[in-house]
Structure formats: C-alpha cells, structure tokens
Length: 246
Image: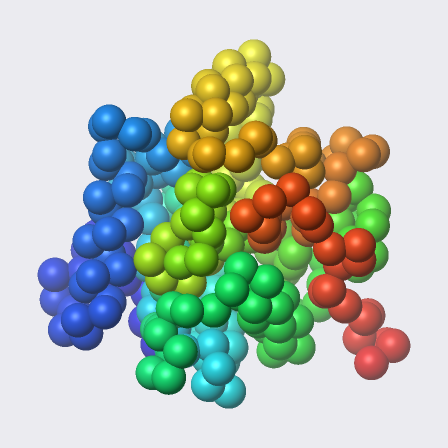
C-alpha cells in the first residue's frame, strides 16, 4: 500500500473507483456555494497538505492490514508536511453490497476497524494517554501518535457533513489540532464559523456530543462517528488493554 500525495498522484495508475473518490472529494472541498463546514480541512486541502490512501472493502480481512500500513507510513512523515495535514482513507465498496449498508452497519464496521487496527500496532500506547475512553484525555492512538478520527459514509443524509459517496476516514494528528488551537482567540472565531456553516450544511441540529478535547464533560470517541440523528452508543466499542494485560 502507498500514500498518495501531491507529489506522486500524477504518477499513480489509479482504479476507476479511486479516481472517482478523489474527484468527489475535490468537489466537496472546493464547493463555494455550499462550503464544507470544517474550515481547517478546506485550508489543508488548498495547501496540498493532505495524504490519501485507498483500502480494500472492509469486509476483506486484509483491509485493516492495509490501513495499518498506511497510517504507520503517515505517522512517520506527517510533521514534515506541516500544519493542517490529515490522512484521508477511502474504502473500496463491497462487490455484493455496494454502498447500501445502513448508518448503524457502517458504525459497526468503523469500530471494528479501529479495534483491529490497534491490535496491529507495533508501538506501545502512549503512557500519558488513558486507555479508558470514558476519561476526557482519552484519544485514539496508533504508532505512538494521537489521532482524531472522523468517519463519513454514503448512508448519512440529514447530517450531510458526515456524508460521502464512499466509506471514508479523515485522520488528523493531535499535533495538528494543538497547532490550530495555540491561539485561543483565533481558534474560537473559527469554531464559531464552523458551527454557522454546520447549520446551513446539515438538515439536522448540531450534534450535542461535539465538544472540546480535554474538557471534563468531553468524550472524544462519541465525536468520531456521528449517526444521522442525535442518538449515540451508550458505551464505547473500542477496547484497548495494556501490553502487560494482553
């Protein structure tokens, strides 16, 4: 598996679905009439600081191995790319189901991928990050790095900000988010604009689980996968044990 970057994208022989995913992502990031709510994401794309990866249909047992390889490679280089970088992962549609799964079915696939991905991690979970998702400082970690996980699916309709024609992950390092929030006043202004855009972008109210990392009433895992309504899982499906417990 290989990372697709602005430097090598024109040298790649991409499959039809891969080209289509990239084109649709480009359209979404550049839409002026209905701008995508996440302003830092649109900035990162404009600055060519995104990396892309393609993973086989998640029903295939090798899908998580491919995802692990891509995220490991990205973990080793993302700081050299600079601020506003993210890794965008597109999953190949199922040959049998296409993109006809329900939001809840995609949710199960999402958490299954994260659990399997963690089992493939070659690096210890950072000692300063709790493994208990109920704690406010918990965040998904891989290869010694903290990541915010965003998931979009073809089945989201009302929550258009979580809709994409392909099952997709946007993986953003905490290092990037810390750079963004280093100026609290600027970050608060952007946050306000993002919420204004969300109101116009989605046909449903802003999800109440959206919060700020580290706050006592914050649960990062609830923000990774938002359903098409305001319902949420009662318990985080991610389970991580320390190596000595395994």
